[in-house]
Length: 411
Image (cartoon, rainbow, N blue to C red; front, side):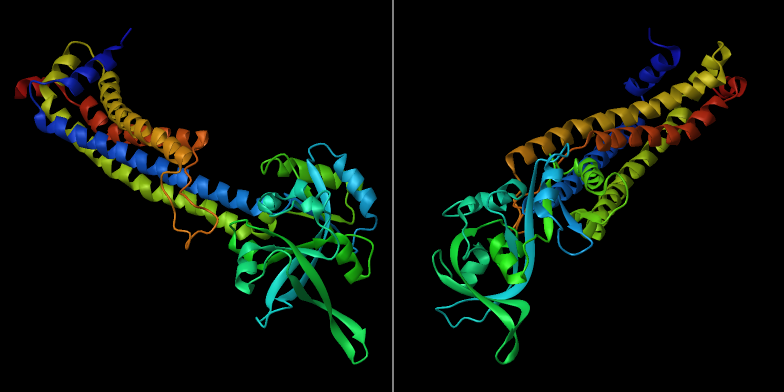
């Protein structure tokens, strides 16, 4: 059953006999709130999409987190791998070593280019890194000792093709006849990958982990890359792995993921998300002034009616509530239309990638991603209603303070 306050509020908002100016202001208030809600939803969706895409692309080339030992090398790589792989939540684990060097083709006079070289286990590397999905012409499982895999951009810049020999100068010193000299090794290009991430495609290379161990004079890996079921599962899987390696307490094993090394970047993206939402929320706040103005004018226009209601037994609290209901209804209609337009638009634009981005600006994000979050939508839906209710309290209190005798005498 409709309450007295809701019935009167509805009649006041939909009356057609007079008060055209008030109706126009109410419409502007609704449109303003709808525009503000639309802008807030789109801004939050873009911020969520960029954060998710950056994380997904960064984690596509590496494991979700890396395990290391305080000694610098894994004491017993195979035993550590076995314990990690038995840990619940671990999808894959693979050993690796890291080296820095310079690369150049042996049959060219092109200047050398810097290279981050990863020694990987061909049998398990694909389980922790999606970068090998684009590898051509052979899969990473076919990688042999003496072969190297290079990024597409690096290969293009140096004019390197599959099957070409290349020379790599490592940032390691070796004692030779003329003293300390950097280590030099020759490799055959076995494949080229395309990650669409500039940093990886122009500066990364992969060799067999046995080649890396031979260069380092070691039989152990430096790191173990671990992949969890998803990025969100890292927070659960990483402590479980550390517990398995360290025996449930503190120990010599460490774990780190890209969110740790890029903490400032991800923190900045989250701050930017809510700053954008706060800026667009100003549209809602501006529209709220129209709610206040329209309700103040409505109180003035309905002064005689309010006097009659109060004289017939309506309480000041009821009069106050009916004007608060009007403010909430104005905000609710605007919020509904804002969500009704923005949510389907975000879903369609993200599903069909309708807003492309220039490759010169974002080399690994080809379109504007719009990812909706239930929590964000809930916040956006509640904010205009709360602000509309707060704004309507001033004219509502003014209406509840009308003296029925004065109101009827004035008429």
